Length: 106
Image (cartoon, rainbow, N blue to C red; front, side, top):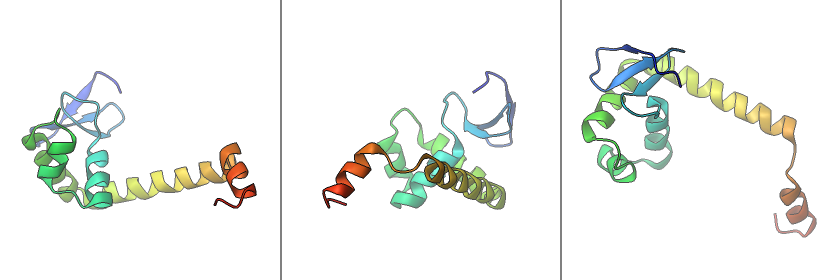
């Protein structure tokens, strides 16, 4: 992450030099909070419990940013998931997975 950032109308959210929304004063991307909320069903209070280095204000600001830019961020999430899926296909099975499969454990 670059040290330069562009302010947004959200007090705790800025765009890094690549235009990725981050929580000001941290290296945490807004998308990371959104994915945790989605994957685990965590409330803002649970997100705060899991990330005590963040304030509730930062969490709510990140979620507000997401809801106001949902289409754009959802496309970014899909792009990242597709990239990860392709990388897994290219990499193939890990040696551990091969050993476990050979023993019938997976």
